[in-house]
Image (cartoon, rainbow, N blue to C red; front, side, top):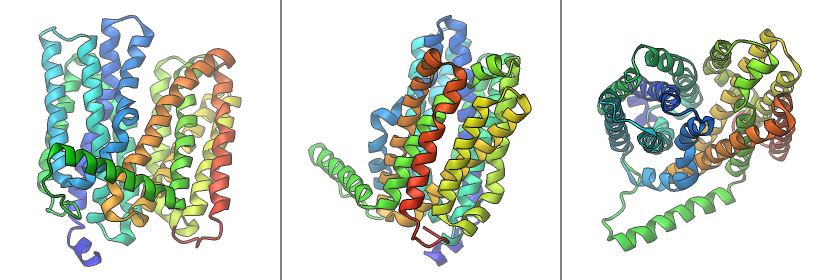
Length: 410
């Protein structure tokens, strides 16, 4: 595998750029779709539902996406997904120009592109080990995560809001265009993404049975492997608690920090800078401390920042805490994905990654709903603090449970 990977290290840059363009397009769309909905309805619930619908695929079909990935040529799969998403988004842009758009079309676009995003993210995790040497996985994953943060949280949403102000259809046209370029870059990659074992042609009944069996195999492996199982559970808790306070962050900015709504975007950018920094220093941290020290460190940092956010009304302190929180979240994700790539058998990596994504993505959606409800009852400050204890407890427990493992690597 080392010699094989050494031959294809250079294409990783094209792969990274393709992923970044996809993430950037996601960020543009995530910002523009709620703005489009807000032009058509005054209902806060109807507008908020646009974001919820985009995360719904993880809850409904997330676990099964890994079966598709493990059975497919990853490059062809991502090309098909991005081509389909580009066509759907372009159709929405045309509908806007012809004034035939509506909430139903917006929800449908949000859901179908959400399915595509979930499928692409699952496939993308399995591609990195085929493009870099095993010793370079942490550096490669750090760069991928930094690109995701820039695309999804920093440049993409900022561009989406700005483009929407110029012309309502423009952000969707740009999103379709970036996906088109991403497809072209994928087509330049070497043919190293075929499944480990190609399934034989099967009739529909046999295929359904095979898919259920393969999904069960993934679940059974996850239950047996305490390393990946524990990190998956921790990811679920962290995603839920993180989403709970993030769901009311805009209210925190206005009511607690007493800032204008425009400061919300600035604070998000400050947070993203922390995550980008981990793209540079994260691999050094994990190599020095090892996975089972890095994960609790990231969890405790996230817990501490939540407490600090709940206690402060100073915008500078809040911006600093958001940067630290984003850095800690990125460190946890980078460590977790590298562990999966190193410990999970290649023929199961898609299934385990989709199960991990289902737990994290589903918990995030539920946490956001719970955070909004809790803020209504207990207030915004209490919501910012509430998740600190669960995050600290779960990450300390997994660190203690695996304390005897070597510090250098999982």
